[in-house]
Image 1 (spheres, helix red, strand yellow):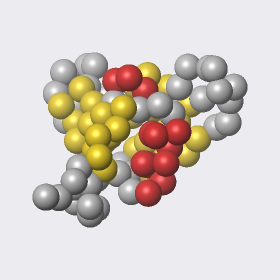
Image 2 (tube, one colour):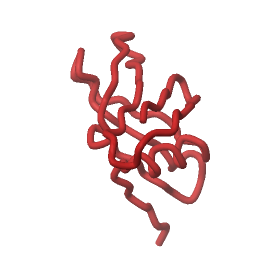
Image 3 (spheres, one colour):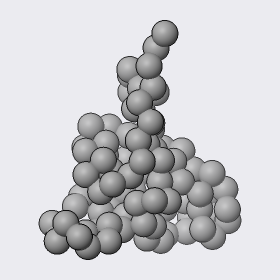
Image 4 (cartoon, rainbow, N blue to C red):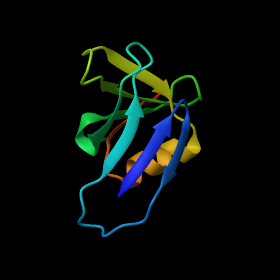
Length: 90
């Protein structure tokens, strides 16, 4: 499965469930474009849009990238096996 995420948009192509999941991503700092496996991402789901985001490290410039994750992105990332942290307000 290959999933495309660019500036908050995402699309997915169906594939065999055992196939490796790759996500296309871009770095806003160096403008690099690349594919990363699901284990390169982290997804945090909070109580609001401001606290729901995904993150990864750019393989080109090594900077941490954090992007907002709407419902569709959350759906794609969780379906692709990305590790998820659920944030709780206390």
